[in-house]
Length: 434
Image 1 (spheres, rainbow, N blue to C red):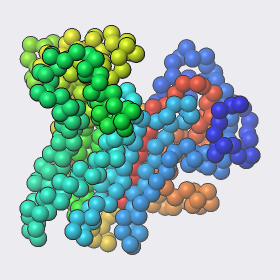
Image 2 (image 1 turned 120 degrees about the vertical axis):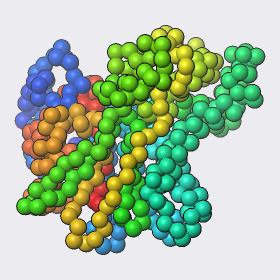
Image 3 (image 1 turned 90 degrees about the horizontal axis):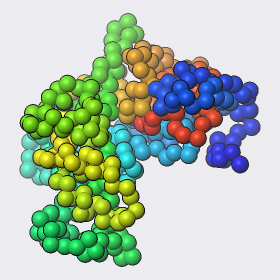
């Protein structure tokens, strides 16, 4: 058995076996010592398209009756032995008969439990805050800055609840744990035989996710973009003479951003190891995200609650390595950067595409990202004469194809590489017509 899912097994895929060198894999997670060259199956054009589509968890939503506005999304991880920890969301939110649109990408880390929770509940919490805002303002127009504040408040409240829901299991909060034995704490947390509600809540604290969330108002006149972490937002706008402008809308919240480094250092004066080797407490890359409670609560939260979630089953030494630096939490922020952009809803307005992507996409593009996105936009504008492209109209899938090389051999090399461990980071893309 080769472990290949049935959906990948097409007789038309049969092609010659070729060899890939280390430098052939874009954004590679591989090592030069992984035994290169390695074999892959060189698929024909139609088979490469079909397999890429099958591996990408495609989803599309028509956002208006005219067909002008839509959103396409995908989640791609070519190594079938490693489930993706990325997620995306596209939802229309009905507030008193007026339709808002939320789209998002989430890049989970350490595990998929928290990112799954966030992707499901983020549209719900935003809808709840929109409903409250609508009740307060009624028919009055709400200024965009107030909506931006609401958006940030909704995300912060959502993240606060992840830890607070667990602390509420213990009357007196964190301080009460000093008077409880490990077995007493375990008895509270281990309720799996009774449905596992407490266990599920506590497990969310062990993992985390970045988030990039876009909100468009019912009149299609405003876009708000909330960013936590290192996902990326791009605005692709049509210009004169059939040209396209590619604008990066977000900045990464990690050690590559000097402003983020300065912010964290200023929040923790006298703690030179609050950032170590470009990572928070020397352990985690994103400086803003959801979840990751050990970086937001005192060490007692991790040692008394999370250690007792899996008693005796995990090596705690990696946790202790950064917990010893945890003096004045929080070190990771749940406050998103929210930016407002005006939109032109008129039928004759130049075309715009909003691209939301996880860092796996930026990795495979590298320094060529603007050229890749520009070529994709030109292809979308001109249409395609290839029949198979018409069978796969997803704008997100076409963008992924372009980034992987825009060639069946290049795409095949990534799809069918003979390796047991991931050679690409997880990739999520949402393309929304504006």
